[in-house]
Image 1 (tube, rainbow over the protein chains, first blue to last red):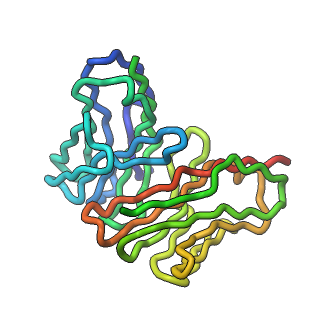
Image 2: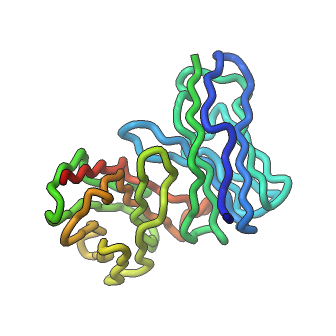
Image 3: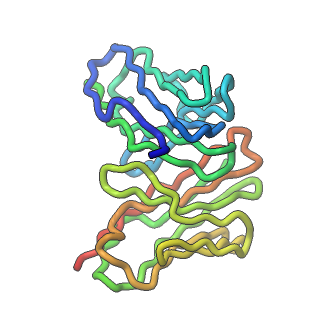
Length: 112
Length: 114
């Protein structure tokens, strides 16, 4: 079934450790996004990529980095995790920017 | 900047009751408006959308009308079911925004009791 795959499903991580959240889509969508979801705050955009080879900063980019080496993959890296990065992370994609987005099932990350 | 405000939940209704979830927005450009639904343990799914003023989006018995004069996009359903229990997010996408990002409201949890 076509869609977005995120891994891992959940992770507990010690503060200061490096972590990469994986996201892969098989719909050949040009645009991809990373959001974090926190209670009462809805979803906030971390980084986005309108097409392979390009990335941009969203609303809350600090402490995170992304790369877009090809169309299908859009990994999100926390270089040195902090407890405030405890959240549920959603990857999304859309055929083109400004079109409806399709979401993965999320990664629940806890930083201790 | 762009923002979306939706009513706080949880909203608790009995089956077959009428539903309205209010959503208002502010945007600098000409946004498209969306409602997304999130079922427990899952990601968000697009429920409906409207791309210009006076458009009505509809899906699965839900509908919402893009009201530019009141900057609103309220979600309505005439008769809810237990299976509609979920969190609903109003969102906008502003063409003038270089990132074309979605701006989300805080979400409204709906609980429908049999």
